[in-house]
Length: 175
Image (cartoon, rainbow, N blue to C red; front, side, top):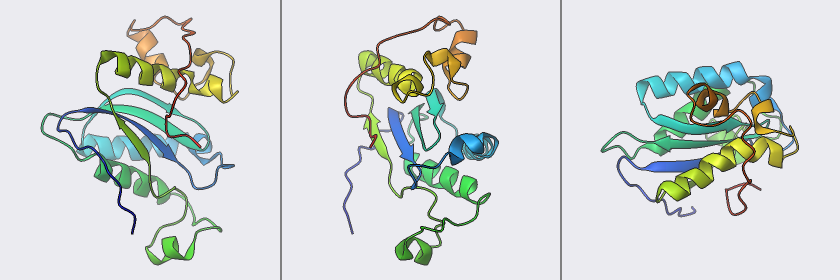
């Protein structure tokens, strides 16, 4: 079994990349209502502050701040994936090992996370979330993508509706 090194810092802020197993799938945007339901159900029971989120057809990015004393982001992601998966049939390409564990083969088992270290780091990862649909050629401006928290932040006057920040380069857990 692989050994993954994760940093568990109580109450910290993290950036996540969570992917579907099928890179060609559009399931997350095709069933955005189901993803919102799963996300809302889990986070109402185990709250976090969502600093930023963007949902693309086959993956999502999120920046969460955990409650003081809390380090349990793995269980939250496990539950969100599980709740969303309940709505869908098993993937025809699910591996034998996923099937043996009762997994439907919809999600990649693992996800990528990064501990946010300071305000500049936070700004970089939030900008990455907002700019990701542009990076993938889905829209020409971040505000055109409907499945992103930039809209909430515009309503709260935290960012301008014409935001066109540079899309950061680097390792953000994408393929």
